[in-house]
Image (tube, rainbow, N blue to C red; front, side):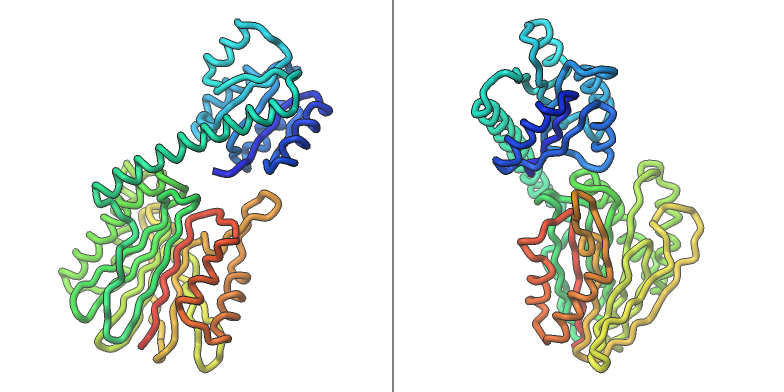
Length: 374
């Protein structure tokens, strides 16, 4: 959890005083002079705590809280009432609306800060305890959407790395389906959404993908376009996944002839570093998100790889970043960074470390698979 707070008060002087106090002590604050302004801010960001005045014209703090409780994304954001009214009935009304506490406006700044610090600490501890319990359950059930290791091949080496957003399991998934000594399927997908909801549905997509591959291979059909086409029809007909979509990149490695085939659905381009030209080539599929429409002609591309060349499969978190509180995406920026590293001749491990810079803010799950032709 971060330290982002939304302050709502129609008194602009009071609002600025609170903003300055909290900002000077490490908090990031967004401010709103009305409920309407606050709801506009909440369309783009979800804070870690909402502090709202009760007495405001048009819509008051109780109205605001009731509206938040009807919103699935916002109902669980901790809410603190700010008021100059010291009335037991009022306080009980606020607590009945699942506010975590209330705070009088006339208390000293030091006490205000202590109260907010303690509330944020309690929320964080509860959050981390719940997260730990969920992780423990997932481990006991052996639920993984990222494999423990990659297969060892004769003509290819595979390295991969995945980092969840805010250290919570999310929608990125990776899989390796080794059919026999010759053929291996490499899969990278991203279920729309974040955190546990996306993580839960990723297993449905993984199960369908594995089944589609096995069924086609059983009939000696290794066509990636046909595998995706069959997979897409099944997902479209699944009522459970009616409003859940996923991107997917599939690469088929022929470990006998050294061939590489690629197809995708709504995914980012696959990148290849060309040793001779010292440049990056992009391979973009024409496929749309899996399950979006029943019929779609997925394409298939053969990627020629010379010895020593590398192929990069990435999820969209690798190109996402935050600027002025807004999420931005820039594939060209990522390509420039990757190209700079490759031209320097750095190792695959160094590339991974540089692309997953710990000092860079993460705004989504980040995953990369690096396939090298031996």
